[in-house]
Image (cartoon, rainbow, N blue to C red):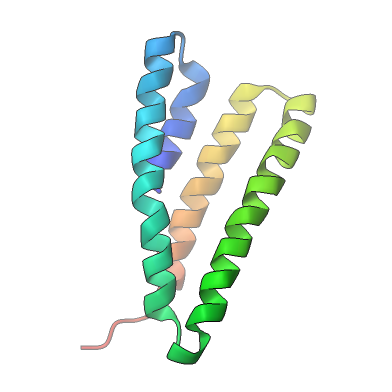
Length: 109
């Protein structure tokens, strides 16, 4: 998730197509690493009886994000600019990573 946050934070300052492609590669790597890990984490943390339901909830939340993201992005861009938009995205991504660390279950050995 931190790679995604870094890419979002860098996007407002891209001044060329080459820089944009470089930032997109960073974002793609971060998302490509995070997405499968989310599904695996959901599977591991779920009780056997709840695994199917929790996997479906994960997919529903992702699909909801694909809908609400552009909707809220349009609202933000209507009132502010792309810099505010991408800095806000970076902050929300860092917040998500922090919540994952804070909410993770305690390991017992």
